Structures are given as C-alpha cells and as structure tokens.
Image (cartoon, rainbow, N blue to C red; front, side, top):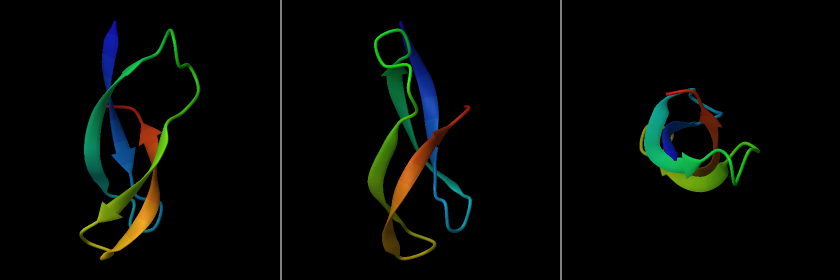
Length: 50
C-alpha cells in the first residue's frame, strides 16, 4: 500500500517534491538529494507528512 509523502528542503523549509512510498517495507524516513528552485542549489530533501 503506497502512501504519498512530501519532501521538504532543510534550508528554506519549502515542500518541493511529492513521492509515493510503501511504509510497511520501508518504515524509516526518506532522504533524497534534490534541486530546490528557491535556494537554487542541491540539498538533501527529507520526508514529511503529506
């Protein structure tokens, strides 16, 4: 069962990306290196509630 999670930039605190995740198979928080168009740089975006 996939759930939608949002990825938030740690620098500007904006929710830039949404992705789907299976919480039963992967219970730990997701962290991905993504581009933030407001900071204009790559940062490690972390999972937050949708």
